[in-house]
Amino acid sequence: MVKPEKLQQRFNLYVKNKNWFTPKQTVVIGVSAGVDSMSLLNLMMNLPAENKTQIVVAHVNHQLREVSDEEEQYVKTFCDNHGLTLKVAHWDIENHPQNGVEESARKFRYDFFLEVLKKYHGDILITAHHENDQSETVLMRLIRGTFINHLSGIKSVRDFHGYQLVRPLLHFKKQELKQYALDNAIIWYEDETNQDLAITRNRMRHQLIPLIEKENPQGVAHIADFADQVELMQKQNEYLIKQIIKQIDDEKRYDLNQFLSYPEYIQQGIIDLILNETVPNQFNLSLIKQIMQLLNNRTKPQGQVQLAHNFVIKKQYNYFFVEKIVKKQISGLKNECFVVTLNQWYSGNHFKWMLTDKSDYHDELNKREATIYLSDEQFPITVQPTKNDDKVTLKDGGHQMAKRVFINGKVPIKDRKQSQTLVDSSGKILAILGYRESVFSADVQKQKYVLIIK
Ligand SMILES: Nc1ncnc2c1ncn2[C@@H]1O[C@H](COP(=O)(O)OP(=O)(O)OP(=O)(O)O)[C@@H](O)[C@H]1O
Image (tube, rainbow, N blue to C red; front, side, top):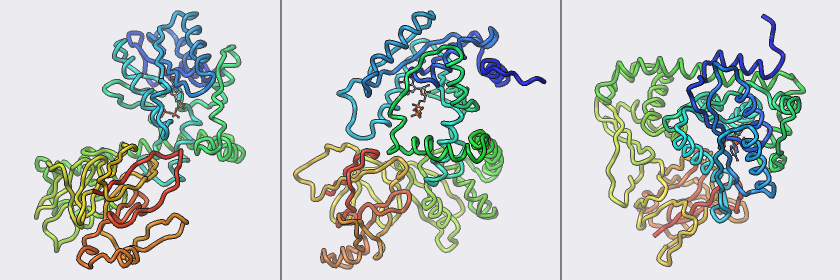
């Protein structure tokens, strides 16, 4: 078969093979005025009749850049000229947060996309994420450290509040999209914040990816293929583990002896899947390890490990199961490890404490208040019994051991034994609760939280 040369032809063929779109469907396309989404919009407009959908364009004016209004006007004119339905949202400046602007902008964007889907009875949301975005995402996660599941990167199709979210360009290169726009005289706006090397993604884009492409021009495509293979293996794995779970499942109580008859790597797969169905994306390796230890400890017939959102995994003699616990307003399980739920009070030694994202939280009656800057990757935050050699970070960048904190604070031995340490997903110590907090410098890339001790 002769390989079609033109991007539009390749796109048509790709879409046809994937069977994504039919003429009866209405798709909402997120169009920012950048080259990726302008090209996507044109590609979608020029699909052959059998795959051509109704199009609704959704544009968000984030009011973050000087050209925002100009971009909005351009999208409006483009849609007018082509008879396309357009819905615009303004993210008012007074609603911009001081920190975590990107994250809030994303939330605003996707909330708006959902609104547009509902309003126009849409079927599918489409965004213009492409092969380079995919490779950058996979590399960032790989370098930062992640579960293998997350190396499948951006999904080409996923559920979005009961609608479908499709990214049809994940196997198309940025450069191809640019060339398509140039060939077809499509105007676009450049986002100059994409040049800012303080942003991890931009360092991947401008520093790492060019090196990879120099090594092998197909390197970026290979990373995207790798992500596809991970996704495939994930699906295969999930299918097989589900079969095993069926065998040990007695109405959501799982047979411990049968569970223990499997090798540890399968046990871990079972736990991953059971937990992910209850509280998705909340687990780190240390939590999984604690659960594995509890279930494999034959000398301890009963026990529990607390999960996020008030769930616990409980071991009871021959069974284990996940359970939601109804809590009083103040809760906490002393000397056990658990995941912290934001904005919830927990009981400590002689105090209660809370980690809140309400950064303006302040109360004269608080015993202590500490500002903590955290990125998304640092979650889940967990609580563990304090060890003498736990180290908090001091203002000068030095460290202090828990033992020293206790001695300086004249903390009685009895209380030291009850003490709890707050740690992030990488094991970094955020605070020895009630006694000493690590000192964080303000970081615009991170979100501000407050640890309150009352
Ligand atoms: N202002 C906007 N208005 C409408 N759609 C947008 C806007 N910004 C981005 N999009 C859509 O989202 C896609 C991804 O945009 P971008 O790469 O800037 O976001 P991201 O933060 O990397 O990804 P995401 O927000 O989807 O996780 C764009 O190709 C476009 O389809």
